[in-house]
Length: 320
Image (cartoon, rainbow, N blue to C red):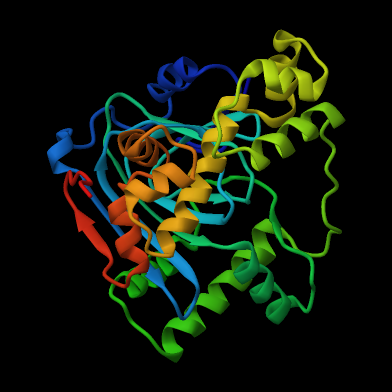
């Protein structure tokens, strides 16, 4: 089942294998460039205190990112490489020039097609900063919500790339802020709802109870037996209900909560070893592996971003 959106602009609602098969028919050549090794990957990040946003740039990345969600908005775009993206229950074949828009809590995952490396840039905006900007632009207190996760062949990519480059260069002042507000206004007008009331939590009571329990016990060992007791469901029915309602398994949900907690502690300058203990990871190695899987950076790289140092690193490992 698919809907054509022009070359490469195809939504797939089957498996990731469907994406790979369909890629052959999308109009793109199979090989774009020689695949780089892991040592050739380049990952750069910077925090902009003036705008209260994070900017990330990945080059030559082969990594697949498992299903997860963020507590912030993500505005990103692909510069090279095709990817099979799963978001909000649908699968998309994305390509260079496509815009990606994720709301806080949007479950998503992606993997490469035909071994192609990924060049990708994004700007992450926290809910408070986004709500503040929407208030200034539209005069509303309602947090905006992007209505679709992919905009194929978006005309705003050039403006977004320029803003992203200004953030990575560490520029400050009126010119950068003007570009940020004008671009954000256009993105929200074209691709978001800005006047809807806050969305109600429509999850089943049992699932809400499990989510609350996981949030309250994220730094403790959690068993499926305990979650079943909280939900008053058998372990099997709990897994089915939770995954259906949230689009993610209870353990993946817990991992995401722990990652978010770890990010908050790293922003405060806490060491990775201490963060692992405070955020519920078995040890520092567990934290580092989870961080690289979900964020694409090591904990040390992430912490340096918020220490004002930024990071441009090739294959660094944390040892603290």
